Image 1 (cartoon, rainbow, N blue to C red):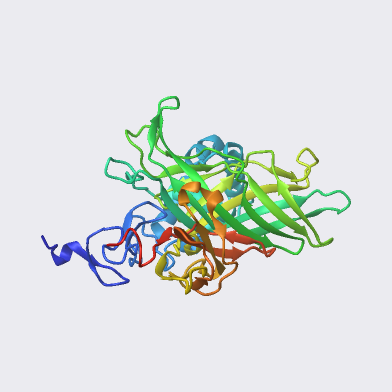
Image 2 (tube, helix red, strand yellow):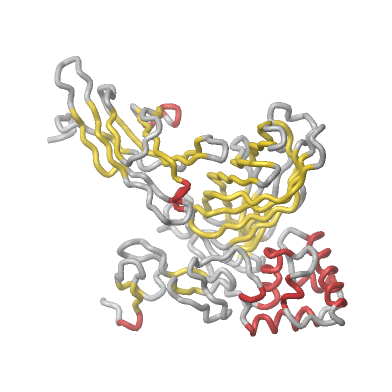
Length: 461
């Protein structure tokens, strides 16, 4: 039955009429309904303000953090009123929980009360809170949301139900990792600073279940890709996942008493990284690993995890990968990860859209195969990371990853001819490739596998 006009919404991309609050357009697949990253209310992607929390919805849909000038008046008044009502840091801390950061949170609560005393015992503006020592933009954002915003709990799909896909739900996020560091290499002298490493990450969420041991609903998360580059005057770094480690990352509802999994939730990632670092003073390049388990945690309002801020839980020491029992060479201090929106470099799927099997001219001549695939879009977040393509071929995908061979080298257009493939079944797939700050290749997930079948074939009638 057709929907009445007042219960439909036109897609901002293709103008197709969709049922009100459909999350993705039924015609083009564009995201048209999102969750407000502040309060988790449902909003259309074209709305300019959330009706629940009164925050503006930026044209980019997601922001790294809030600043005092972005806070609506009613939220500002509520935060200031609640801050001024506290004199006990433990009580303040119980209201402004920075997830997983017990010691940090208590220190910040004491610092806020000391800051309030400097202003005669009462805050009059959020600028004074913003400038308090140790707060920083990310934790200021968590404080404002905790004290000034009523969040809206909701139950997501997250692969629940017997009609959902059996595979996990993938997502990819434009990612920034801002961290302080100290180089501890002997003979170099004190070298420290702050770096913002940018690019993207990819992860998957699994169907939640009830953890009877902990008495809480929980959903597993798995990081399946990470590439970050950054530098300052002292150091250049390229960061990737240490695939040898198999951590358990997870989501848990903030309200642990709920009868089923819901958002807002706590997200905790426990992943070791490989850091390739160049010390600019000496030109030395070192590959670094950690024997510790880095841990970051933060608040998430929906899946995919866009608009999330994850805070580090402790300092992490990194050692030379070639001397894993050697002394620490790099210490990572306070770190915050920002997932700022979709990452199209990881989300794009270079599926083979057209192919031509060209038979050999003679009995000893090999065939050729012409391939054309979906090109990387332009002018979308992280698509500027794209550098070239690789084409892989396998005689049989059932042989696993070891059966795939890069047969093209670097291809800069979205078409290629395989000049001398072997006879027999042919399977191809294409991957997009970026270059790290050190010129190393990093491959995104491959497109779908295409079996190339000749026009004259046993399987054609």
